[in-house]
Length: 484
Ligand code: BG6
Image 1 (spheres, rainbow, N blue to C red):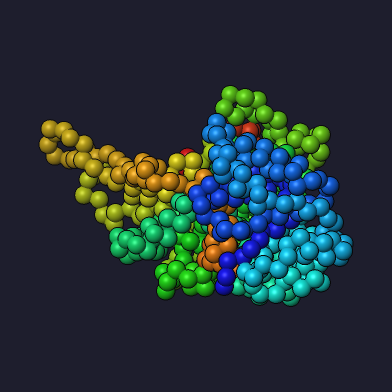
Image 2 (image 1 turned 90 degrees about the horizontal axis):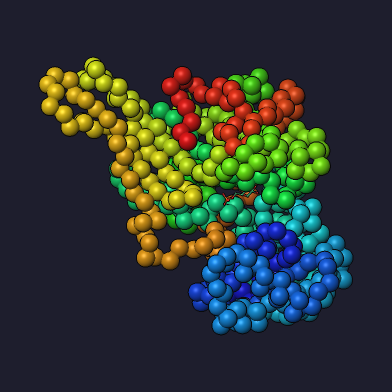
């Protein structure tokens, strides 16, 4: 496929475009990674001139760059690529004008849908009505794709009627993170882990994504979704499937995604009667983050009553040969005490201890995804002493800081940079396939339906705490716990 000639961003004045998409494109341009003559068209409803829109984009890029200067040379080149299109996505005439603006680039265009999901169908139909959906045109869909399996299917059907699956790029920005990709390297480029990567050696797995942020001005979106739909259905289940998948035959998109979807399909549905012991729903109340007082979730928007969860913890099981009986504890929450995303693999105890007077900690592999990027392994060691008889033992860490190891290597600043580049280069490996998105929804739907049936409303937790009291009930054994 030839290189696409244009990227059209629908929802070009929205939060995502401002904070992620335009800054990412600027950085790609800065590093010479955008194709020559590649145009960027921001499409949104309100009226603005090209120049006024470029000024907005410059302000967004500057905001993201913080203290760093933006390069005038890059800016001039970048600005010359940008045009603004004002139109109503639901009006067919808009697409005639859009088509005239894009022209007919030989490599086609990429349409990035960063709007509310209810606009996906009208946009695709509008594009189709003016013959803009055939190959080599591509489409990128921002999450959330639907609010349930049924609504996700509806969107997939509507898009699939005009774009073949290999031209649809569903975003989960966690797949663009360096450390998330490193999971594949860690698992499949080292002989050390694979023989231990199963129910024989692993007691449990923990995936925790904690944020200090609240809803950050996105109340109306968030209140419709909550942590299960906003984080678990996509980011956490993607992490789980990468940890649990079988070795793929190669790194091709279809090989990787076929292995991930098998894991998602093997997730044991959580029955309603098990929800009270296998899941926790929480919602943050007022509290303190980094010494600053913050309001509770329902005060974020004029004290509107809400049963939306901002915290969820659950115990998942994967019913297959490798993982039978191994709990996967998933947890995510807003307004937690610190920003920390990590995966912990807790190995089993030694089968028999010859150190009667010492407590042996089972080995633990910790993969820190953010804010710092690191891999650590906790192992038992002898403490240097002159005592005779029993050993004095102590757990110590083997630490690998990826930030330190690669400090001379340029790191991509935003996960979206990589994803945009991959879409431009037509590589789908870091995007979610239709069956993956639908399988993940199916598992989440069952939980959401059960919560509604049991009227399981969220328990309050103080902002700046690790979730509602009693959240440890999901642990299958008394010695299991969250590592913070
Ligand atoms: C987004 C969610 O997908 O991921 C947000 O919609 C969340 O609610 C964000 O804050 C977290 O992403 P990151 O990269 O900061 O961990």
